View 1: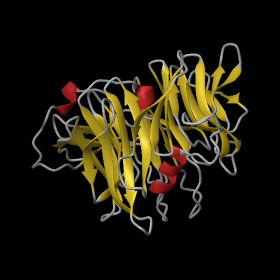
View 2: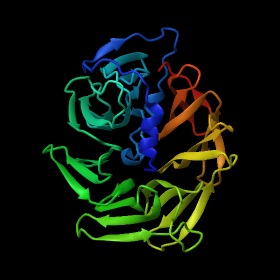
View 3: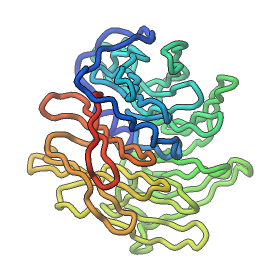
Length: 359
């Protein structure tokens, strides 16, 4: 299945699994040479839903930064006093899709009882002080929190489910083969493949949760009236009355009222590069790419601002960008360092200037 979430999972996997989690909060050592900076006083909670569609492993709540370290554990960083606290001791193969709501952290992580077998993640919750760790459900390819529900794609069926945070029950929402998905009020937008094995005959669909009616929103790539045959459609997001998605290295916008499709950006890199993810918020339109060499090894990764015109604001030759997260003043970048073979986080402002934190 051509799925951004699945790519994030595969890209983060390590061959050796470690011990099971304990879930206790404890203090970690941090560098005494780092100057305390009050970066978080300027951050606020911005569009939680869209901030995690790319599977982000770093998040903030206006007071602290939560992130996944190289052991795939969840750590809280308090920048004003430069302290780190271990929130979830997981030691898993993959941890991501962090969501914060009230005092709870929801996330995906793999179990460590599969030995050397790579498996789909399970959903967990832990309190922001490290207490109350518990598993919610298994086999999730994605995680999106809307009000009191967790929406996820089941890895065994590619069907969409929602988990009621109050009752603890899961309910199937769609029987269809669902790829990328976003939820806006009582409407669910998703990419459906008529032939998921070959990823052809793709359509962008709308499902009304009130009336239970389903309809096709778009079945062409915005250039010609043919079906989206053999196209790579991903990164679907709803924002402010429009759907945004990536198809064939173009970022397209579909206005739900006018039903007009327009191209708002394209991959400016070489032909052997790919747009890996897209994120929309009131701050603008941002996407990130990877450029490969002839052996399809990542040479460099970039972040682009496509709000007014496509402008590169960040580039790294040492790491692969896995996801980005937008705050009021900063872009949080989750990368995989190619030299040290571990996650590394970069924080830049919207001008592309890097802010250094001891994460």
